[in-house]
Length: 292
Image (spheres, rainbow, N blue to C red):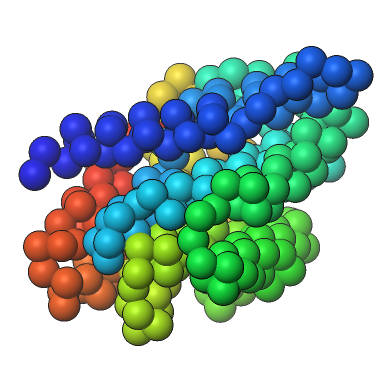
């Protein structure tokens, strides 16, 4: 398997469907469409839709998963828009471009994030061809993963931890929710739409939980060791905002060891699927070695 070629093909497919599902309208509300489009198509790794597609393919095919793959990317994009706001992390650079509120103003950035969240659910409801019961189950996963017991809950912990020495339990809870929740949603809805069993869905949730923690540890390491030119966003922002990270809590060497351990734990959850899980294994290793 040529992992990079397959990875690129999945990214391109995700972008094609995002373009298909994002219908920009020329009306009195056009300014919010411009702001939504700016962030949704500003680049990015598309890890969540790729993860959703790969899990679906492992159990069947990715066609029924595409609305969910794109919807979860819309939710992720909305979270980045809001995360960059002055009332949150106050960042002015994202993916090498000025952040949404710098270009469109704070009020329009808030609205464009809200609109992308709504569009995510519209996308599934308007385009999913799966059985209604499966769609409802997938929507439940998506809603819970993006809400107070998921991504938003993690953001709450993050905000309330600023300027404080956060312990390891709180730090892990923060990132399992803030970073891991949407990855778990992508993996679970992919497995569900691909025809996986309840056990398969739980296995993919476990895989994505480990993957999400590893992803965050890598982000924390890059925030210290990389540059704004490579990352496309400011470095050192966690330190400037007085946030506890894996690096500040454990040190750089222990964080690297944890990164390897969580990546291996993710791969180990795929053992029973053999060669069917080859792409997911390579994805975990790719994220371990990424430089942005």
